[in-house]
Image (tube, rainbow, N blue to C red; front, side, top):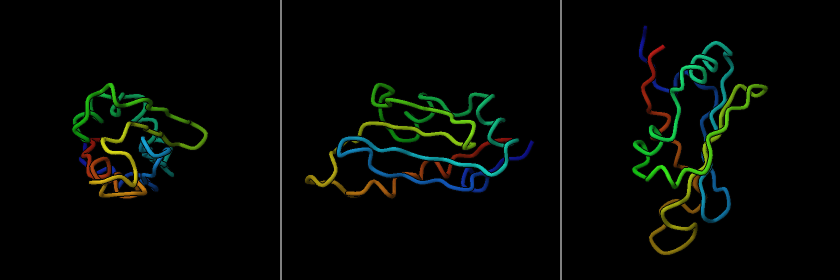
Amino acid sequence: MTQYKLYDLAKVIRSKNSGPFAITLDVLFDNPDIYYKIKNNGLIDKKLISRLYHIPQEMISQIVFYDPALGFKITFARKISSGTSFDTDVYGAQQHAPLGELVIEI
């Protein structure tokens, strides 16, 4: 098995606001084998996202795999609502980095 960063395996990794109080991460693949290995081996779960984003698992509202798109979506509550004092990413567009840096063995 070889180790890869998720950035190297996915075609698209992005983040965005899901309203002012939540962030959504989207990960899409162009290789079905890689997508199904990640999905079927349970490599992405609430425990992992909690660790990567330093949030309690209760803040993660969903992790959804969508086979027709070869992708998954993760939604979690923002620690600070969009556009308020101390918000450093008003659009939520820079929140995918911890997930993209995730090392996966395939």
